[in-house]
Amino acid sequence: MPTAEVCAAAARIVHDVASRGRSLEVAARNHLSSVPLRRSSETREIAWGAIRWWYRYHAVLSRQLHRPLRKRDRVLESLLICGFYQYAHLDEPDYAVTASTVDAAALLGAPKAGGLVNAVLRAYLRAGRSADPADEETQFATPQWLLSTIRQAWPDHWRQVLETANHKPPMTLRINPLKMSRDEYLQWLHREGIIARPSALSPWGVILDKPMAVNALPGFEAGTASVQDAAAQMAPLFCRPAQDARVLDACAAPGGKCTQLLETSPQIQLTALDLPERTKTIGENLARLGLVAQIIAADVLQVDEWWDGKLYDLIVLDAPCSGTGVIRRHPDIRHHRRASDLDRYAQTQIQMAKRLWPLLAPGGQFLYITCSILAQENDTVLEAFCRETPGACPERTTRDGALATTMGNQFLPSDEHDGLYYASLIKV
Image 1: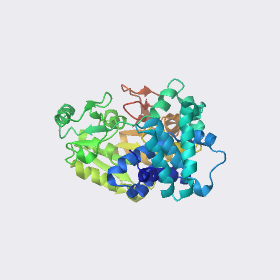
Image 2: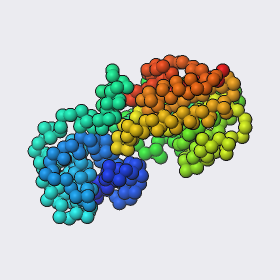
Image 3: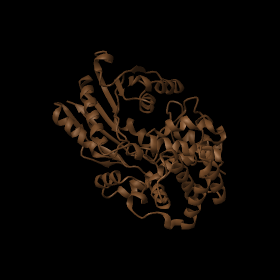
Image 4: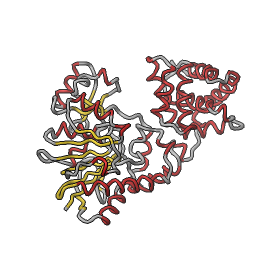
């Protein structure tokens, strides 16, 4: 059952995200230390869930309060939303949630607010489902601008996309074929009593029935398995680098795609590039998997500072984007993105493509990837790039599980995987 300390820590995390603009991961690192380690997963469950459903329960709370809370008491807003989330989504007794949430008010520096918190929580319980407003923003717990954008982009699929965003993501593994086959690993999991199934999308993917700590995964430390979404595992199926090909993975952190390319094509010469503050995880993943690659800590756009003058046969650009395909995994995206961000990301994406294209050898392949489901960051970017770039020729391929677009393939979020976009250009 939740404790007051857990409820208070979760409320601080939610407050940092919703009111202070911090990312969920940064907020969690700042506040999880206030609860015992054994309680950290429970705290994360409440905080992630409250952020995921914020736009629903904030509307409920606004109707319950006669006047807005003072700015200095705004953390109580997050505390109450954490309470609403627990009532609706966790299998905990209502009285335990109420008691812990009321006691947490004192830990948040508002000892006199216990009566208010208790009254609001009990009013919510009395109202039941009738407390949930019926408009679309609260129904799907998604800001209206984003909801409308997704509906316009995918008129036949928008409900599936938004409903999937409110589900908990599965824990998916990528099996290293240099170590063992997927069937062998599934048998290993079965012997250990771990329930799992093969991914229907990725030939290397294994989906666990229940998430677990990575250090408890069989073979994880030995590099037999890595944690990676099934749609993110599709990169090797869109590119088949030749023997001894020079490959550049731009924006490579944390290293999932570059390590997978080395697992599936161990003969390549791979360079992993990313900003200095992001390259540490690339090195850690390479070391754990026993793989070798050159790591460059630099800005993609500052080509003259890092390129050695030798052309690449394959360039993979996993471009920065809005992240609209991974909202389920990163629910704070709903809080931090604005409609104006889409054009800004598109400008960065096309700048990166233009700076990297001269580094590609004639006949080489340019693989463009985003975790966005919006054409503004995908097809539209590549259409503009091809119009302005002589020799840039789309290589149109289709993959099972993806929707064919004008320039590439779009995987929409589903219960099994995130939403990613892949498109290939050939330099002719």
